[in-house]
Image 1: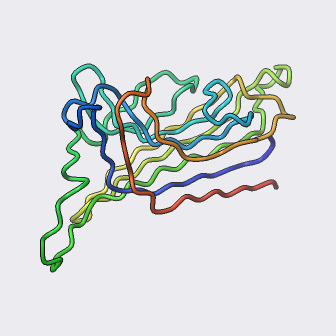
Image 2 (image 1 turned 90 degrees about the vertical axis):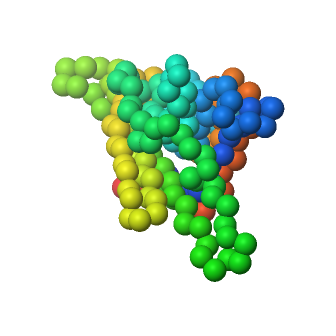
Length: 193
């Protein structure tokens, strides 16, 4: 895994609703995620390096934030937008199409370096692998909000491991409700040098 990767997805029109169809009663957090996995099952969380744009509920708070689950860094990311207002992401265009609605564009990036970082004096294989997540929301009127998180993992440090799956996914914590986004781009870069 001594390769560096960068994945990027751009999307718009995020929307979620409870099974009843009400966007205001969505019961749990959901996310657009970028994943690298050392096994072919990309949803296997214990073998995946993940960065997400989370549309979440934290108690009574509902907001949008960058999240890097399973990283060793335990700090909670702050919300870039709070509260979630799905109507601003999915405005109704005018009937005559004279002035099409401008909607926010979401850009989620994840970079990952599979080189096992070992502190001086440590045994190879007992180090960390490093990654970073980046989220940008570009909206009407030149409004831009961003967040960047650096993280590391200690459970994927075998220098002989390979990336066997990578992709973008939509998910909820418990698989309840429904959600959608409109993907604009999905890009992968690999640097084996």
